[in-house]
Image 1 (cartoon, rainbow, N blue to C red):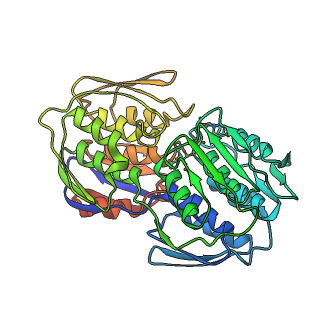
Image 2: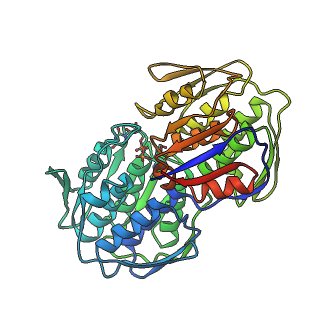
Length: 420
Ligand code: EPZ
């Protein structure tokens, strides 16, 4: 297995280009199941989760070509509606095929995704919503067996909790349902917005895009004319590089970003004392004269994103004073704490609240990545640690970050990928 070897204490400089958003691309690839013709998607991030989703569609009978971050996907040849365990277990976002497969074919079997390091990750809200639309749902031998032989019916769905992929699944199901669906307490992340916009451009009338209430007029199982499109920039990758600039107190520029998706992250960094230059599609972060401690409570969009919690925990280690971070979305998203403490941090946990002493003296160490965003937090801490850090199990990183070590090397970090 590969690991990253990082020598700390290097300032960064220069610019880094942000790739397409993994969490926008995954539902959009699944949405091609609803299309009557092949669709070309541009600005796909070449990360493992994307290839897993493309492979899953291929297993169902679809065809795709992938070249230069562009995929042309033809799902007209799908002849199988079972998303098998050995693929789904690799990536829980495979559950995003459930809504479109059921809506188009009236029957499908999708392996239960199971939990992951950060939590249980149930899909009860997805299933309850599909039942409201007339589906018969059974759980058998680890599979969701969903049936709607006469198609799905438009319905009013109230999500008890805001769920990103739950909203995406139901938006895709509603797109082919008979009649109008109303989704109340919908997620409004930019990734959900782009899915709605692509379906709207394909002729599905969706009102309330970007709000927590969506009105979707379904096509009654008529396949859609989905137009080719380009995936939005990855706001979490962008936030991670802003943290790389911040933690090393450097001046770096991010290119191909959409700063409107980064408001809560930029405001938190400004509160800490960092300065910014914001232009059309690029952001420059500039050093802070005094880096202040902060309080964070992770919240659904447009609040502070849970996917940036680990990265800001690393950043809090250099702040003056004590910071606190409350993780409200996931029950176990503090796996990076013990690894950061092994590097010399002093972080204490009390249920869902982490208290972090600033001005920590960090030493390089062997550390273990546990999940995608925790891995990037360990890399950030390694950038300022005294000595060499080895981050092991970086297959977690490769799921969601494009060429992380190459991009950081170009910014002046001493980082390289090694073989165990
Ligand atoms: C999406 O996961 C993202 N993944 C996650 O990003 C992100 O952390 C999360 O949204 C929150 O923003 C993708 O978009 C592929 P949820 P998702 O359903 O949809 C509970 C990353 O790092 N819940 O919004 O699975 C759930 O347990 C990944 O890129 C139910 O109880 O998250 C959690 O507490 C990690 N029942 C909360 O809702 C359900 O049926 C939010 O989960 C569904 C969710």
